[in-house]
Amino acid sequence: MKKKSALRNILKLILGLIGLAIIIVWSGGFLGDKTDPDALAVETGAPLPADAATFEVTAAAAPSRVEVVGTTASEEKISLSARIPAYVSEVRVSAGDRVAKGQVLVTLDDRDIRQQLAAAEAQLYQAQTEYDRAKDLFAKEATTQQALTAAEAMYNSAKAAVEQVKVMLTYAEVASPIDGVVTERRIEAGDLANPGMLLLAVYDPTRMRLEAPVPVRLVEHLELNQAVEVSLERPARVFKGVVSEIVSEVDPASRTQLVKVHLDGVANDVLPGVFGRLWVNAGEREAILVPAAAVRRDGQLALVQVVRGDRVVRRLVTTGPVQGDSVEILSGLAAGDVILIPSTPEG
View (cartoon, rainbow, N blue to C red):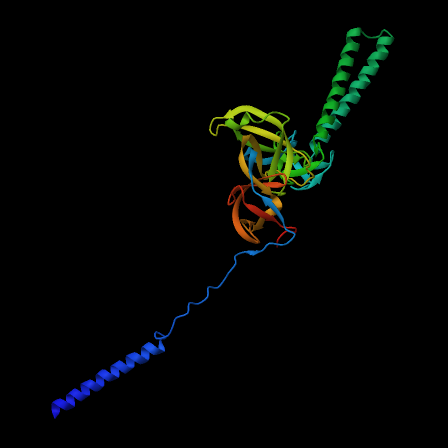
């Protein structure tokens, strides 16, 4: 009896497990026909506008432009220094002030010079009196030619001394020799100014140039009066320029020659010391040029919209120098690609 009861229990357990397995298989859908899910159709990019303007990318010969960095400077910068030893009475301008030609910028204490002038004028008066007396006596044959000549010499010497002191008196006022801007102020009221000591510096803001150390291998591509392009950091725009000077000396450390480029179209908006780039054309090479309007700037990134059928897809590119209305693409596009030219700039 015990064996029969045990067999019945085992049989029940096996039947229960079989039933549980059937339920699991059925609920999982393994007993019915499977239907594959439809793939979700996703199209990349955006629709191509109906009236869109496009441009087919091609490789063409372009000038090989090499960038040379430099800094701006005025073509006329004048350092004003003292010509007499004297204390500074007044400084009438500060760095950055605009000044006119002939405007007095610094005055020096001239009391000592005025005392010298008074003494020289007194000596001149005495010498003139003696000279006039000698002329009267000589006319009356009461004195000799030698005495008259000596009196005349003393008079001329005293007259020259007065003129010399008057010239020194003009040195007590330091005036601007040009219309310009004060760029340096090295003196204050009460300071002692010695001859040759720098007081102020004034530059002409309407005559500016870029000074760039050009590698020797590129100097052969430049010549005097050659038209070039210069881009400045401030103001951030491209200027037309003309090579005004090529220094013949080569810097032995950097193997460069200093090239000075006169900037056209300067309207008092270029400051000395601004960072700039001189573009030197060094032959021709194959390059990809696209309309500048097709390139969108997003921070430090440059993007174009590539046309694929009836869709446009954005693509990152690396840009090179701007050449007129075109910009060079260094990477990201190949010949045969078609890009979109937006009718209005993208925001």
